[in-house]
Image (cartoon, rainbow, N blue to C red; front, side, top):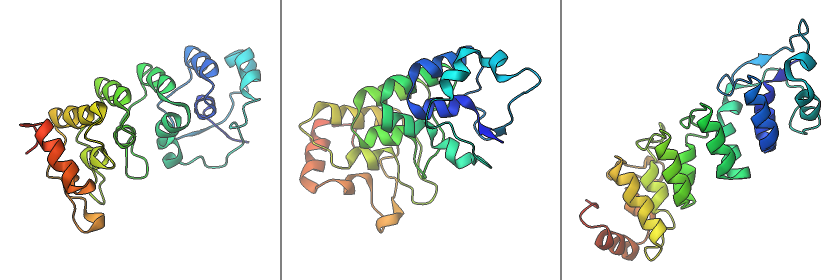
Length: 203
């Protein structure tokens, strides 16, 4: 029987305590591609002690044949979308990369789309790629930042300002919908207000 790396399942469960213990016990948080066999020479109890017994009760821990790399690349965004920022930050502080792609997107793209200013700041501070763009459509952070933006909301404007200052492409073309610039993801009136409030950043 094969199992995904236990820390992956613990992270997917949102169980912060178990994730913390796995990391402290040497669980690998970046080697998410492999299927691992339990090391019966040393035994799971010796390796993880009581943590293993607790982990077995987590519903996400299942027998998986051929755990796929693309599933594990989705992990950081699943954690953010399902469990919020604190567990994400813990994983990043432990060395998990913020730049896995998922569905041709990234966790920073998700944060920009949700207008989650604290998450945007924290992710950029931890090395998230501000110049990320979908390899197929060209959709970038500003496309997500402009989408459903409210120019009267200071946090929305702050997100646009931050990603522009860190190098997001203002002229990036989103080809999936006929070739749209970031500002095409909001109304003309909203864009004029954004441009006025963020002058001279907006080109």
